[in-house]
Length: 448
Image 1 (cartoon, helix red, strand yellow):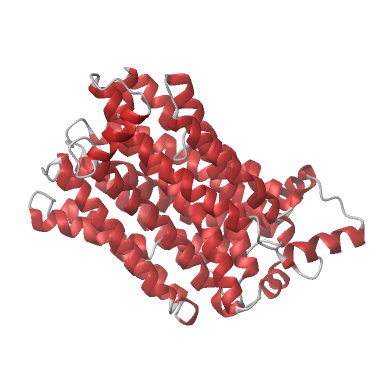
Image 2 (tube, one colour):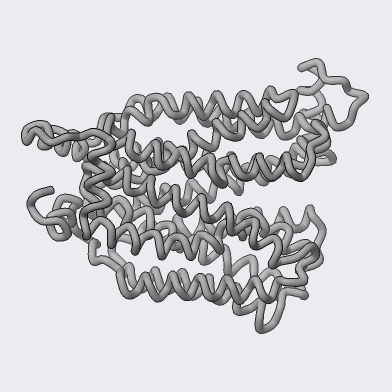
């Protein structure tokens, strides 16, 4: 596949990352409005968070989608999965009660999880040797563009926002009782989810035109010629009995889980940290986070041009230095002034632009044979998202109601990031400039 075509397919598939992150941020930014409209309790919100795209919904979807992609093909996922996503978003948009809202978040979350392993796998398999890292970076950039745009729209459409007049017009056209503020206000969240529906429809039309991965087709043809079992149970058996595959899963899960436990907390609690520890208003906090995501986009876009020609070890270490510096700042100086608070936001933005997730997405699609490449990624994503959901609950107790446990939480973050750095340096693979076939033969021999 040529440079132009691989870039085109990368952009089409990367829209899944926009939709993934967009669903998480859209849910988080609008949840207060749904709480007021439907009279939800904290228990209701807990269920929504647990089953959404940020937690178990995506975790369940990933382990299903990974093995479906290996069984039926990457194109199978692209042809049908976004129809599921659009259904989930549509249910959220039209929700009139809690069961509808919960079902919408669950369906959306499962779809997000199903799409992740197929997306990363397809991007790597359709990329040229010297553009694989670039294309993964573009995919990750899309993950940052989602929160940036959705957060910005959430602020503009929110009650009192610049575009709230449009929301009121939409509410009136849909027959809302304009005398009930909560019924009108929740339309700002409905409008944000409508934008996700539009992007999902565009992405679905682009993705269903993609050709199947040539490497996947070659792997299936070879398995058929040898008379090998290509069922899902067989894929599980191979994955869990091959020593190289098990070590690879352990390595990737270790570096990604430890980093993601910190990143997931930052993604969900960053506005709260700015408000409670930094003492700024909710509006100012949202703008700070929007700028942080803009930094992520700028950094990821910049490194995409040099990623395939630069030492992966150097970039991996640099990204984690930024991450560690973010939390060392908290325990050494604090974030009580505007200067240190902005330093906290900027440092984490630099880390996220050069994040462990880029390396995880790259290595996760490089270090496994085509026959269970997506399934292995789905398994790891299931583990990481599931444990991140549990860690989010633990963090709330450590952090406290008003940030009184922020310093203790920071030490926990430093320890997790240090593990990611050390494990990454010890187990880092040498894959730059090598084809997927060459990497597979080096690691698994000629039998794969």
